[in-house]
Image: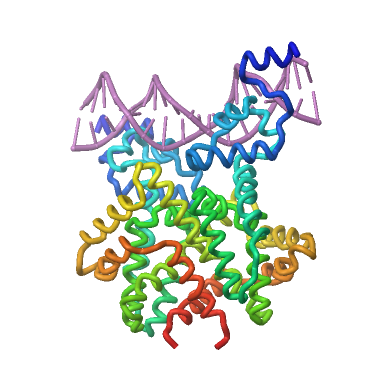
Length: 226
Length: 226
DNA sequence: ACCTGAACACCGTTCAAGT
DNA sequence: ACCTGAACACCGTTCAAGT
């Protein structure tokens, strides 16, 4: 009682011991609130009311922590995916689950990028691979098909992460950010950049999520034997 | 003369003034030698025999410098590409030029990733776009086709960068690194990860460059109308 | 077993002061 | 106009010392 009161009066120290799970949840919250650069061991230890060194008892280092936070979201999404449609539809759905996770948590995009063979990525490969088998893709094309899809998803994710970070750093919303880029494109040399210039209007009006799904569709069409 | 002698005797100060170009070249050298984390303003200013603050007169900040270094290599490769084949072949060649640049300078992969709308990327989009037009891709599909290819290239590049960084950090060569991953895959739960496990042997023997080209081919096949 | 928190070895960036 | 280099406000990580 006396102990509790003194802890409460300080308002700082925790009662129960830390757990890896708590640390991961706090890291996710911090990343969501303030992006990749918001996750520091100092901010994290303050939020967890503990010393900065204590975190290292449960987590190897920052990259381990980022990967674990990423896997928490991706692994959950992949496990919970209900695959009721055709294999093609299912792959598209798995991709969109990834897209939505990255869209809601932009830092996931770069965490994925920098942990290309870790557990979050394995969850994705496995689920997609099962659907490729269901599609009847021959064994010899498993590797190519899976890695093409993966590389594409990784690319979109990384770009989303970069866009999110850029927008946050400059305090821009999506429309303003796109507007700035489109304007810059319009001012390019017409001789040298005619194609890029012609994309400016589509840049302003495009829908990232629809484009992502359409890109998956394009790749699936290329994978199919006909 | 007296000035020159004293500078030479110190062996440190430069004679002519710094230029942005010199800084970029030194940055590239540093990045090639010791990776992304090798590029610091302290190391750079030492190499250039100047003060760390001097660099900021020619370069806005670290990210500006990385983008400029990236553009130096990518822009050059894109400008010099001789496009003598069919549009499909040319797109594949452009992609391979990118792949080779990133393979020789892994940091380019992440520089590209974190500057998705900067000048290096514009060079690529423009060249690829011209070939898409030559393929007869209708205007309405320009955006989708270009961004799918770009996202794929970006994904491969980012993964290459991550692999390179991982290998350097752990002092592994390619074979050892792949071996470690393949072994880890083999030890996964057969129930939960049957597909990933089945890829382990292909992981050991695959050829990144060939796979990359094949992936481009897959996407091109999806883009073609037939 | 688990936690503390000062200390270490760094960063990128700024800026008064110099030439 | 261009450069200096100390100073600022941070990092991730370690580790002796505590409980």
